Every structure is written in C-alpha cells, then in structure tokens.
Length: 462
Image (tube, rainbow, N blue to C red):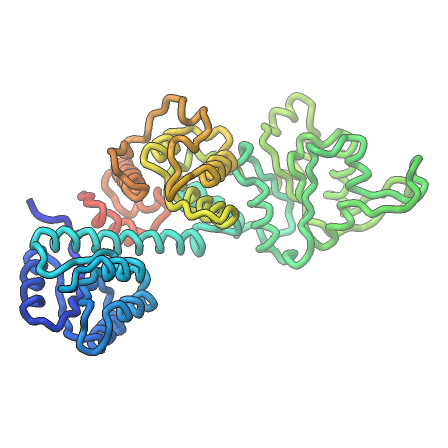
C-alpha cells in the first residue's frame, strides 16, 4: 500500500558525519521524503533563511562550528512551527533534558534503529503540518472569519457579513432577528463600527430589563419638575446617542405608549422630553433586535404594525448554531483562547469524547451556550484538555448522535475530528452539486482553489 502524500515531508539533515548523512538520505528517501543535507551551523542557517519551507530538521548536537542546542534555539526564532529532532552519539539524560527544554520535538541517539528513525520523522512531519494548519486556522479566525466579534466561515455567516457591508453606510433602520444567543447585538456593533457614525456613541437600550413606567424617562429624559422627585433635568438615551446609533434590544417588549413615541422619532427625527412642550431634533440611527416572531405579534395586536414596517426597512435573520456546525471548531478555538487568557490556563483542546458531544448537541442556547460550556471546561480542566468530567451534566448524560463522518476512536485528537467533519461536509456539498466543484465551493463559502486543495489533503476524489 502506498504512503499518503500528507506524510511526505521536506527534511533538512545537519550533520558533519558523511556515513550518518548517507544512511539517513537512504532511509528517508525510500520513504518518499525530499531530503537535503548540510554539514555545519552556517550552512543550516543558510538553508533555513533560503525561504524554503522545511518540515523537519535532523540536527546533530555536536557541530564543528556551533553547539546544536544554540542552533535549535535559533531555528525556533526563525520558524517556531518547525519540528527539530536532535541527533547525538552522547545519549545522556542531561542532553535529552536540555534538548527537550530548548524545544526539540524528540531526541535520537546514535547508533539509531532504522524503524525508529522512519517512525519519528513521520510523526515530526505530521506535527509540523498540524502546527501550521492550526496557525492558519488562527489567522483565519483573526483576519477572515472574525467580523468584529462575529465568528464563522459557513455560508450562512458569509451572508450575514455581506449584509453588514451592504447596510453599514445607510442610515435606514435595521431589524435584526434570531434566536437567543446567536449574536444579534454583535451584528449591531458591526453595522455601527462600519458606518459613518462609528466615531459617535452606540447606545444599547435593554428594553426587557427596564420597567415599562421607567423606559420612557430613560429614553427621552425629563425636565426639572416633570414629576414628583424630578429635582433636576436629565437627558435620555436618545439624546446621548446623538450622531450615533441606538439599539433596542428585545424591541417587542417596549410598551405600546413608548412604541408610538419611537415611531415619531423614526418618522420625524424628533422627540419630546417628559415635562416639555418643545420637540428636540435628533440625528440617531435606529437598530432593533428580537428573538420573537414580530409578524405574529403584529397579527395578535401586541406590536404596532406601522412601527414594524418602519423598523423592517432592512432585516437580517441570524442562523442558529445547529444550522452552521462547520463553525463549531472555530468557535471552540476562539473561546479556548479567550478563557485561557482570563483564567491563566493552558488548555489546548477538547478530548475526543467531548468533541463528539459538542458536535452532536443541538445547542438551543446557540453560541452563548457554547461559550459557557467552554468557559466552564477551561476553569475545571486539570490538564491540557477538556474532559467529560468538565462538561455540564446535561451534555454528559444526554444521548446524542454525532454528525456523519465525525465518529472518533480512542486517542483521536481535535484535529482528527475537525478533519473528519470537514471531509463529511465537502463530500455532502459535492453530492449536492453533482460533483461540480465550483458549486460545491459556493455552498461551503470558500474559493474553488481552496476546495481543491482541501480535497487533495483529505484524499477526496471526484
């Protein structure tokens, strides 16, 4: 059986013993690796700085012009992801400890066994590739798939990003709909920060948390003496958002009397503070968010129809997390980094059994629920991964069915789960597009060239 192309690497040997170099060339060349050799530290530096991307360096501890540990440290300043295997005829515990502390991938003593060399280099190549893929994932998270603080590369989220770009420059009202925890307020922030109003305030009105009898005063302010206890005048949230944006979170909870006054603000661009007879002109863009069926509330007479149409000039519905499972790995990576930083922890991954449950969960609380699960996991984790014992009881005890293609075996890693899940998604997209890669790429929200590269890496054939 032929070897997978994914494990074939570019190997740099740094050793001044010709017989060692010849043996390694023969062993690794037969394995399919692309092998180059140099004899000293100066030549090693030249090879690393040449711009060629190496997967593994086999580095002798005793070089004619430098100490191997010092060269190892220098290599990691130039290419932190590159796996370096130290080779030495002086296989002492002290040397092994020094090499590993300096960041060596592993330690190989002369004379070495052929099978040991082959196996170790294969693992080192895979480790380098995995580190680079993880770094690419982080860059995508930071540069491409993070839109303000929205995270996702799914087709559904790409549509949300396009909507934000299209409406940001407008001053029209926007209705943002979606289940609780899908990120409606984050979309409002994205619209505001990409608009000409970005330098002015974004004021959030938490309609559901302000009692109905206080909401009008909070919004429009009052004059001194407007009511008992009004000893001073106070401006409201509407006026404090002048020139900026006002977001009504859970707009459907606004009392009918306030709905009428809000309609006037949208239509006339003015309002009257409590206790005043004079209208104040205001320049504020209105955004509204809700997890309710506003049309149904209008039909039931519980929300003003004219206000609904004024708010619904532009509208977007955010997808629930269960409809964009391909974004789960990105979100997990993001929350791991956030809560590691907050809690001074170094949790690198979730255990395979945990990943199965996360992939199979329906996420009724959406991204907010996932964030809470990962925060809990990071806080309770005792080592470098989140185990089942760190999950909420309902996730541990509930039955679940992992998506097709992501069943995990013992010892599998997060990258295994992601690769299997990614493969299942690509295969499904190719089936739906009847093998037309351009259409499949559009379904997956990626470029055809990116899809083609992923198909090669994952061994997917047309």
